[in-house]
Image (cartoon, rainbow, N blue to C red; front, side, top):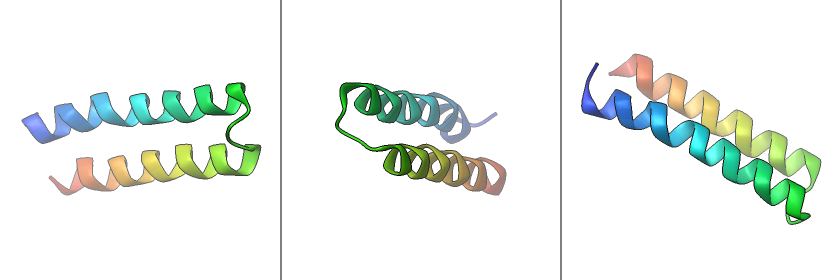
Amino acid sequence: MTDAQFGLLIAAPVIAGFALMLHRMGVLQGAGTLSAVSASVVIAAVLFFGQ
């Protein structure tokens, strides 16, 4: 596993957790939270398997 892949494994859950925390605080609506989490997971997966 390369350093970039390790970074993706750390960064994607952090981004998703941050979006969920913003949703719980009332900053993001449901659709915004869903799109932020799904986009971060899809981007991380594409970059992870593209390495």
